[in-house]
Length: 304
View 1 (tube, one colour):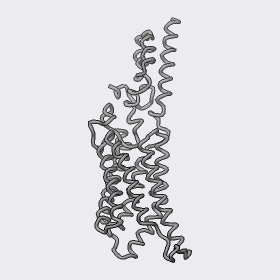
View 2: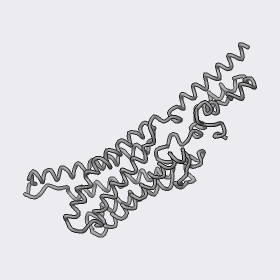
View 3: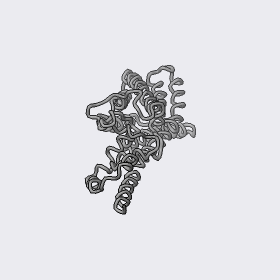
View 4: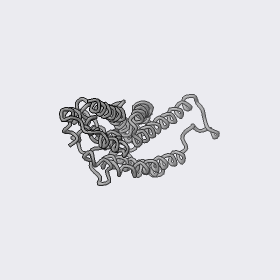
């Protein structure tokens, strides 16, 4: 009897240890921040493209009016909210998510700050050494856009381990940066960059909406497909992957890649004597199943 008690106690200790290790995956410390970041990015990007496509007018006053609206959004909705989304991805241990959101959030805030400073100097009557208005060096802006395009290319390479929708988003954004850089010297290229930028915004809204619907209505299941690569590293979870869920695709995926698969834990499990038939029905020795059963709201059938 004492031996059975010790076996039960040892098994329960291992289950408790695994549940503690899986807690960040099963109960994420923050909600999925990707929809917020994607909507903030998409809307601000689309607003700026109103200038490049000339959809809101071709006069100088029309273009300036668009800029005046965009830079406010760049500082807060497109910039600050993406930074918040990026910090949320840090808590979720999402390398791709926090690198992208923090970088593009910082990009928008930096661009907005530069433009606001230029307008402030103009209002104060400040001039350059030649007596002209203080502005942004076009060649410097061109170099900045090219460097952002190169950075986006590195992110694009990483998307081939994720999904096709995200791959399309990052690729179109990369092309937007390169076309905007070339468009500084050419009107038609600048206009083409604007249309590619609008397409990028549409894709961002699609992924953001898919994330929101899949997480809330689908409860973690893929209702709106995002496209599957054969190289997708999340095949074990039915290919379901969105940018905000790299570390916890689903309860099942987290459990299948939990500490129970470590060699030392498997050895400990083999050394434990089998529990009584009654205990086996209520608390299986298989630690992955035990942790899943003890997690409220998830059934044993989910891991079959």
